[in-house]
Amino acid sequence: MTLVNRVSGSLFGLAYGDALGAPTEFLTMKQIHQRYGVDGPRDFERTPALVTDDTQMALAVAEGLVDALRNPPFDASLVTPMWRRRFIDWLHDPENNRAPGGTCLRACQGLDRGLPWERATLIGSKGCGANMRVTPVGLAPGLSDDQLAGAAQLQAALTHGHPTGLAASELTALATRRLADGMDPADLPSALRRHATEQRTVYREAWLGSLWTHAHDPSAEAFIARGWDECLAVLDRLDAALRSPDRDADPCEVTGAGWVAEEAFATGLYCFLLFPEDAVSAIWRGAASSGDSDSIACLAGAFAGAHLGMDAWPAEWASRIEYADRLRAVADAWERTPSDDLA
Image (cartoon, rainbow, N blue to C red; front, side, top):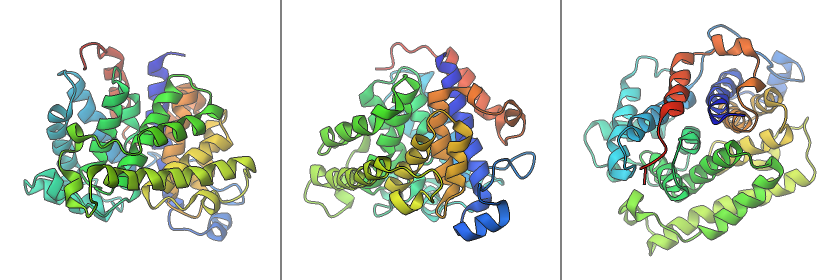
């Protein structure tokens, strides 16, 4: 399978999960079953299938990356103003009417006023907006592991300054990268745990600057360790759930409702790991959940598409999803992007 097939599968999978889960966000399981039956939604309610701010902001991250990768070397000084511009464009987009998160709005308003991003961000917020949009970082061609980690944390930090938002975003991007590189899904949880343990006190100053000084931690290492510790705790819950997986139960009951970053990461990954060879069922499980169903399903879709590629999705969905042209343009641009000289 070609890399571009996996990239397309992941980008479109993110949007498919977002669109499928959007109508069930804020519904209880009882309400979902009453409206859609015991299986929940299995197809889009309309054409075009509308997405939420999850896909809109993932596109902002992806398109900023496309710009940056055309102008190496890739580092924080290059990509930060590109993401700032894309985030401000999203803030003023008339289509930004899909119940966007308050943290993203407030932080982007600060960016729009010209504040340094370290002052615009909400240092206490670890909402799922930090990592619902990060999977394009894991798909971008040619990034080293250090560049991937730094970029994943930086795009989160522009709006969500909490260390758990940073760590969860890095894990989300890394999971996407490992799946696109061909890792067996069964090996992924242990690989992510090793990574989290190794990175526990690594503060990426070249990407985050003085962000940690805006919190109340005694050191940069203590600041970032706080985030990794919460991610390791949710990986414990993921491991416990995978020991006795239940494909029919609400996934939010075991790994969390997904309103915060580490739970969105873990629950989206759990939905994928319940159905590692069935992409549609993975996003169905995320959509048929009692929590932040669009964010959970969009992450499950991104993971499934990175693993299985574009052919895992119903062919007709590509012409029905909103923003299909922009999603395809990102994949096409990365197929042509040289992977040398990014360091």
